[in-house]
Image (cartoon, rainbow, N blue to C red; front, side):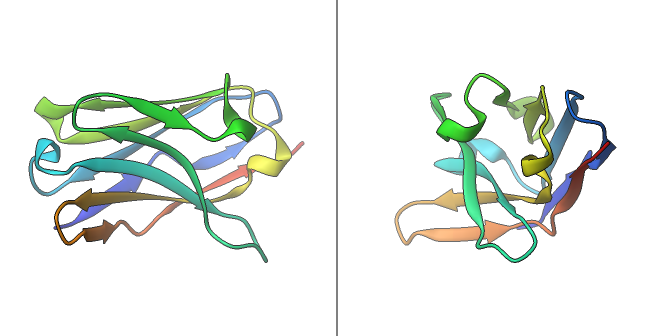
Length: 116
C-alpha cells in the first residue's frame, strides 16, 4: 500500500491549504485514515481522523479550522486547513489503518510552513 501526500507549501498566517493523500488501493478498505503532523523538535501528533463510515474527529488545537474529508472514488483523503497559524508548521503525513491486526501504513509527508 502506498500513500502519496501532497499540497503542502508556505503560507502566511491566516492563509489556507488543502492537503491530499492518494492511496494505491481503495480507501474504503481501511477502517481509519488520518493526518498526523510532526513539528521540528517535537513528537508526531494526531491531527484528524476519518472512518470508513465517514465519521470524523479533529484535535482541539485545530477544531474549527481544519476539516478532514474523503473521496472514495478518487481514493483520496483531504485535509482542508484554514486560518493557519505559525504553530501549524510541521511535516504532515497521512496514515491508513486496517483492522484486525491492525495494519498501519504511512505516506512520506508534505511540509507546511506558516510564516509572515
